[in-house]
Image 1 (spheres, helix red, strand yellow):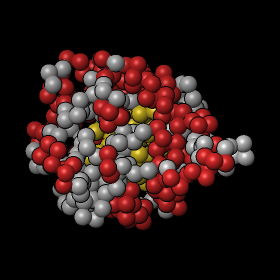
Image 2 (image 1 turned 120 degrees about the vertical axis):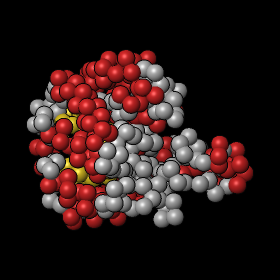
Image 3 (image 1 turned 180 degrees about the vertical axis):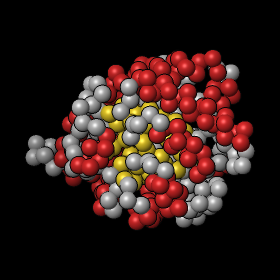
Length: 349
């Protein structure tokens, strides 16, 4: 465990939490899009360890155990429910190992179950039981904080927070805001933030589904609505008012769209919409100016996005050694030892 606690760090300044493990490991060929179950934790643990390490080098202050969707419902779906406990314990052990390589915190993680339904006592009991077992393993592993994320139901988030608070550890709750601009049970993001604050969370905010452009207005509203710390972890995609979530993005090129299954870009044909590292840096500066201190990037993030975010906050993590320096490019550079003929040819590139 880190010598400086989570809440102490937040009191001093911004804390970065790298997310996006599902998408990045799918891109690398170790996880299947669709079910998005983190089988990689058991099948290729070295890949999870390496990605944690990449995010740590890029500037993440929090190593989040890769237990997103490692819950009973998701493992049932793929016939691996017997691997539930080994998968969670392995993910926690990997996170702790990498966090110890730097001054990083370890976070336990729970998420949307896809089981919750309002006014369904049986579903609520099932959800609570799923959270209790995952949080139990995280507490036994000695994590520094607990994260409950990507909730589109306020009621489900309330159950998650109730379970997490029994641990006495710091808590983060983040919502996923879909096209309606409200949670599925009708609460606005600000109303949900107030409810979560009243129930004792330390941090509340938004993660996933929306890119910086369509997330930040709601982050600003939440910042004005509550006194606790605010979280903002967008996806690195150019969402718009007309297509506010990355699930709703439609490729504007009809030829490309014709090639896509059902014409849908989400989840594995989002490449044309990817934000640059400079846009993520701009997001980080804007969020910090609003007083948002818990920052990160969610599904679609690569280590270069986290490095850009860290640098925008005034840091120079180890990976900054390799940040771009175009002065040395053979044609676009300005180094006096470069060949003048190549520099003159740059207009033809």
